[in-house]
Length: 194
Image (cartoon, rainbow, N blue to C red; front, side):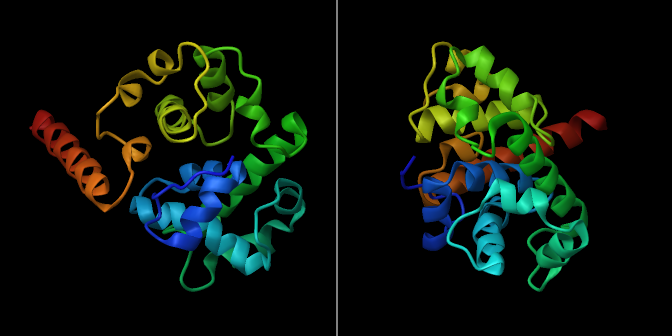
C-alpha cells in the first residue's frame, strides 16, 4: 500500500495514511466528533510522539494504557476525547495482534468478497456498520482494494461520483463537497426531529 491520500490535508500525515494500513484504520477510528482532517492527522501525531516513522500494532497494544492516554492527551490533543480514544486505539491494536499478527493489511489482503471484507471490518473494535462501510469504500475508491461485491457491501458510500465520506476526498475541493453533504444530512436529520 503506497498511494497518495488527501484526508488530513497535511502532506506528512497523508503520506503516512497512504503507506500504512494501521494508520489509515486508526484515522478512521478517530473520525468521530471532530473534523475529518483532525482525525486523519492523528496517526501522524501518534507516530511522532512515539518517535517512529510508522505505527506498530504490537508496540501500541503493549503500551501502558495510562502512558498511551497521556501521549494522546499532550497538547495539542489527538482527539477531543483523548483518554477514551486512546483506549479504543489500543483495543484496535490488541485485536489486530490477536487476530492478524499485528498486520492491519491482512484484514483485506485475502478477503474473498466485499461482504466478507465488510464483516471483517465490522469485527474491529470501534467499527460499527457505517464506519466499516465508509472504510470499505475508502479501500475500494482510493486504495485499489476491490474484491467482488465491494461497492454493494459499502452501500451508498461505494457509489461512484458521490461526495458522502472520506472515501470521496481527493483534495480541498472534494473535501468541501463532502463537508457540505454532511451538513445537509445533519440539517435534514434536525428538521425531521421537529
